[in-house]
Length: 142
Image (cartoon, rainbow, N blue to C red; front, side):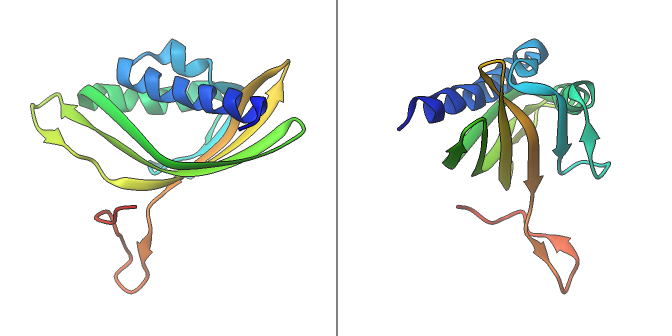
């Protein structure tokens, strides 16, 4: 593993650690100020760090405890840009006491090295779609 790939993995770990700690300031450190996020929740895109953090804040309003698992992270690094993809699953205990194992989603990251630090400039989270029914397939596993 290259030093750059290791640095990127550490940045993505900051996201996971920030989610588990429900720490918006820690999450801020992983993203570029101009991040564009295509998340599973509306709208179609969240533009800028404040919009991205507001989306995570909504998750923290619903969950008492948060866990996040990332599997099969694959990275490609070239110069000051990189992309990666993985499977992710948000789970935990909701404020109403219900525990959920969550659902597996597909995650794609676009990163740029800014002032020597890798930052997420784009992420996309999606669920496979059953075209005939028009419904997301949330019971698939990697």
